[in-house]
Length: 322
Picture 1 (spheres, rainbow, N blue to C red):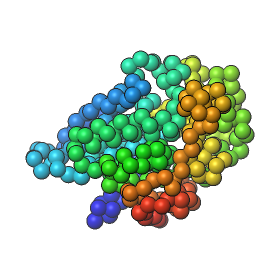
Picture 2 (cartoon, one colour):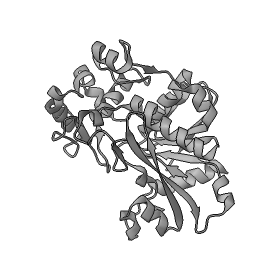
Picture 3 (tube, rainbow, N blue to C red):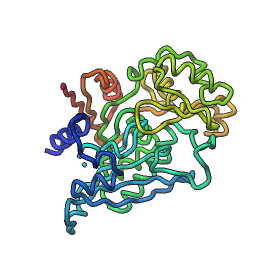
């Protein structure tokens, strides 16, 4: 029953209703939830590297009762180029926001600082996802179910490979929708090794912008007004080109998750070792992972099957057709 309800809910999210004239779709998460009769609670989570992330808890409908707080906690992580508002624009649980979205800021940095945009899947795993999970688990004292969408599934899996025992203690399982690793962002297959190594460095910003425009379209561009390149796509939020570098590295390694490679000296500075960390799916243990995919142009099931086949935990692959 749980997964049937979840599948119905996800379907409602992804169906675009162009005829809808509901004014609440242009509001904030809190305003949209209120329009549909739900109460919300905003929680600020601070990471170890001083990012403040807003987690929006969508609570009971109409009046809250004591039993309302005893329900299964579930955390929704939006895909890249999106924020948590993505989950409520068509109707409805906690929704987290990672760094770089309008629902985050940094105590010591501003958005034009290079370090503000210096993050890939590994940073999201070690900081944002881990700290949000700890906070919600501490507040509810219940094991969570975390749902990741699109590229953010990589960050969730990276978190599980880095801290398998911790994840087993605070999670019932993961739900991954639209897994992105090998075939998604197909244009990146044609990018050469120089993109993987240098796109995050200032001397190569113009080259990166030209390359991205060529392969991914003129609507996608890099903001060169900041000291670190931000990539803009069709979503509502920018993301650093480091994420594109991460995706290219994943393609190079046939689905194995790898942290950003800054070169020998850079890796020593960032990771205290010569090589960037690699996230092995076999390291995940003692949780259940359900993977949802649809055979359409956006999310083929090839990536989902690749991830599924490399997992050694309790798992299920759900394939849906439209």
